[in-house]
Every structure is written in C-alpha cells, then in structure tokens.
Length: 544
Image (cartoon, rainbow, N blue to C red; front, side, top):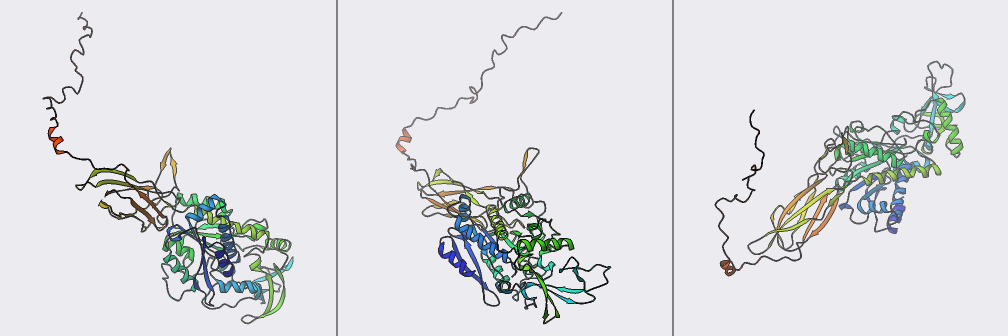
C-alpha cells in the first residue's frame, strides 16, 4: 500500500504529497496522503481514514479508490477540479497496519490492543463441546450454529467463539482516544497519538470521515440538537453516497473513540461511514443498527445460500478438528468473517461499495466553509496636511460555503484575521491585523410564514461582515483574509488613477467676491405663498 501511495505521488507531484505521521508497534509507517493543488494549509481540510481496525479491508481499499478518483479526475471534471483546488484532502488508508497485515495473511480479525490477543486462526469460529453450551447446530444445515432454545435438552451443545464479538465489531474503535473522563496519556496506541498530534498541527480540518465497518449507513456524531444545517447536510450526504442516514450519535456514547473525540474536543463535523451490508446484498431488511450481525435461524440459512452462490470461494467452511492453546480441543469452521460480514470479496460487490466513500467525501468537501472577499471599496475622502490622500477602504468578507466558519459543535471563535500589508502607505484608523468575526454558511436557512429564519442554534447570525480602514497614501494596499477552517484569500486595492491634491492660490482667494449677505428671513422664499389661496372660494350660503 505504501508503495502504491508513493507511486501516485510520483505520477502527480503537483497534487499528492505522502508523509508518515508515525509508526505502529511493529514499525510499520502510518501514512497520510495530502491531496490538493497548491498550499494545503491555506485551505479547508477534510480527513478521511479507512478505519482503526485491522479487519476493515474495505475502508482501506475505499481510501485508495478515493485517492485514485481525485487524481484522475482533476482537470477533467469541473466540480472535482474545484474541490481539489480549493480543499485539501488528508487520506489515511491504514491506521492499524500490523493488525491489517495479519488479516490479509490469514484472515485473523484483530483490533488494536495494548496486548496481543489470542485469535481464532483464519478468522473462523471455534466451537468447544460443552453440555452447558449456549449454541447448537442448525437442524437444516449443521454447518450453521444457532442459539440454544430454552426447551432444548438433547445435544450436542457448544460454546462458540470468534475473534471479536458482534458488539465490539460494530463499534468504531479503538477505545483509547481522550475523553472528559479519560485524559490524554502517553501509553495510548501509536496510531492514536499520531492522529492526535496531526489534528493539533493541522488545525484547518473542518470535518472528518472514518470508515468504521459494515452497516450501509452514515451517522453524524454530534451533540447539536435541532440544527437545520446538520439536517440538510445529512440528507444530502445520504443522497450522494447512497448510504442510509441513521440517527445522530451523541459524543457521550462515543467516549474513547476517534469520532467522539473529534466532535467533542475539536468541535469539527464528524461522520461515521459504514459501507457494505451482507443482509442488504442478499435482499434482506437490515437488522438492529446496534448489532448488524444479528440474524435468526432462517436468516442465517438464507445468507449462507446467498454466499455460496455469489461468493463460492471460502465464504463458509466445514467444521474440522483443531486445538486452541487457550480453550483446548474443539472444531474450527463457520463464516469467513473478513470476506462475508465485514468486507465484500473482490468483484462487482466490492466495486459498488468503493464508490460510496468517494461520493461521501466529495459531498462533505463541497460543504466546507469558504472565505470570500469582495472587491474592496477604495475611495478618497480627504487630504492630509502633506497632500497625501486619505482613503476609506471598506472590506466585505463573506462565507460562501455551506458550513459555518466556526466549529459547529461548540461555536468556538477561531483565529481568523484580516492582515493589511501597507507598504509605503500608513494606517490612520483601524489595525493592521484585525480579528475576523465568525460567519454562518448558506446552510440551514428556512422560511417561516414567508420570512427567512436566520438563527440556527449557536451558529453565527450573519453570513458576511464589513470592515473599514482609513489609510494615508496613494500606493497599492494588499489585503489578506485568512481563517483556519475557511481558507485564505488575498486582494489588492488601489486608489483612483487620476489622483492629485487640490491646489490653493492665496491671491485668487483674496480677489474672489464675497458671498452675498443672507436675507433677513432665510426661509422667505423657501415655501410658496399662501396669500389669496382662498380668494376664489364660493361664498357661504346665507342663513335661512
């Protein structure tokens, strides 16, 4: 994978930069590809990772497809070219390289841990005979293990093990990012430390996407309730990606996980992208979102038949004798989790899933806040004693993007600024460096009884702000407006071309006639006379 990233960077050095942000416990690099045209630090940034689990082969592959799509489409597609020119994409395909190498080598389903876990070989299931076991073979197909019913008395019964239970597989993981109840400590995973340091260094990231696993849905991780901006964005991202929009996840339920940390600590837009659903591929309705692997006996049999038809090579295995060093003698078989429930096998199903992350990333990039500076109004309003023009410079700063310039989770003010490069001019009023006020975006606007409703939660009310300066001097003035989350734009303003100070001739002034003395009543001719206004009115009738 690293070789592929470097090959893409060599083929498009003007668009792609590849760098390592850290190393895994076994010394493998944690690689991030920066994709943009120009200086990425001066643009809104979006982070996309392939997940923090070693078994998430789909997320890693989807990140590589996103990289390929951005590079191949630049200069060919108008919208994509604009996004690459005005946005920077930080793509991290593999944040658990050690565990992913194990999964690629033998199918082992490993999440990042502080200590190496004991795993079931080949990512299969292990069943151990036990009269008190909670599982039994399905009577219609003994390769399938189903939960034991209360009335079951005759075995055989088994304890069933797989490398990770479904609850943990459905989590985002890993679970050691800082949270209010668990501060940052040096003993955290190398990938966690690397991502935290990256986010602290690159404070231009306005949104993050993590391809966390199966589910065929997207969830925004947010504590903001009733936000019209987020509601509009959720709906549009679902339309673009083809993923179902599920309920918003509060950060309190994501403690220790990357997306919860990003939303709570950084305040950025955080999206949980869950591609691929074996149930949906088989034409079945989705299971409980909390446990996408839940299925009853009939559903499991239907899924088996589907996999045998569509994925004939190794999706399910017969049970064979084996011995686990920790659990003892038993049998290994069952699902190949890494190629059925968790990832689609290579082929048309994989190709279909890869497009979802690409479309989601492009949709979120389209929603970024974007600083826009209108042409400044530069007018001469007077002259100094040394005949230098006094110029009133009015700068209008707008947010042309969908999202606000402040972090949507907390509305915290960022370090945006207007910087004047005066040159040979001097500043009479105003400051050479002025703090920017935060701006809302174009999203979230609705009409109530025909009138636009502006306020949306804790977001700023205005979409534009005006700043005024008084400058002395006839020289060009460079103005740079920069914002960590909304980008940077520079403009240059000049005074009118025909610019000369008015001359004063004392002799001519002395010979000029004096102004006429004002009349005694200055309002005498200001209004029409009312004299005779009623002279032609008919006489009033005589009294009877």
